[in-house]
Length: 467
Image (cartoon, rainbow, N blue to C red; front, side, top):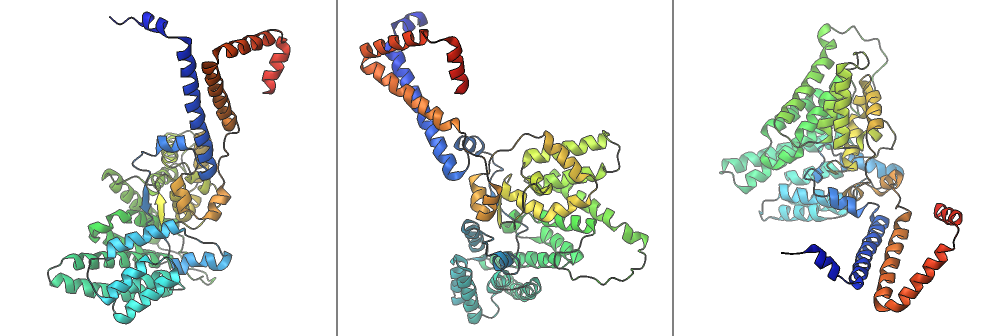
């Protein structure tokens, strides 16, 4: 039978010296790599390794992405700041090639394949114009021009309507021939054009038309576009209707005295909130992937229901618990809702449970939280009781523009990290010396022990306190 006492008694001091040196060397290398990784990427490698396996923490297409020419381009024109990163635009190019390509050979299709691959906006627009010259009814070329070349939302909507007619005609023609890859491509292109047209209607303040188009798309969209999360567009439009706010590009109204509203119109915000609650409940029950829009909208509905309740009532406790669960899902959102951090334009792709998703949510939903009485107060109370979130993930730094990451800052590398690595390296070096020259190491240890014995405890305590 194996005897542990015999085994441990047979181990020589050299084994313990070698074990100490090896473990100290490995620990020092890990600490040095952690320090280098933090200095280079601004995040902890150990935290990334622990939390990087979560299935929800992956990059998704942003369903609320803006128009590049009419909206993103305004930031570059006004402040000379790039609104999108090349990594984000490259992901969009891959999406477009996967959705709008079917392998059909033709001059217009080749020009559009080249347009999706181009890196510079001017080259993409030129390739789209070349495809449109080869085939005037090329819906993909019209879509790209509406996205990147139209200077205003009104102009983008006009080009999208033209692309809508061209895509619907092509889809009907290919469907009559028996379907196939071209019919699936045309169906995906038509659904994408309708979605962008609905977003233009939302920008222009036509919320009823936008909600109708989003409902039709959620019902009839092809399977290739199910990952676009159209229910988030429906939730945002419904919350906008309930808050009574106009679109971002709606023309100002004259200061005239409005006639009294009938009771049915006064109940419109309540009906819109009921629609939003129904959409949230339906997708939560259906097992839709969780997102900041779903969890924070559910928390907002709870906070709105608790607005008229007395303090410490069951409604208020339920609202605080819902906000706490939302903060646990994405801890970056409350800082934008409470305006503790500056906002920027949302990227075209977001990292679930990351800073980029928080920017995309707060950019469109901050007004809804402001409009709901007591919602921001409950969010502030829940944030004060929540633990401090970690640093920004690497994928967020690739998706968010550089000026926003610089303004957001990040955690500094722990000051004692290089010191701990140096101590580990020193321990490994001493173990190596003791293993190679045991007699000299023994004499040095005895001399150090004698010097330490003669040191006054008060001075030793002061030295340790200073360290």
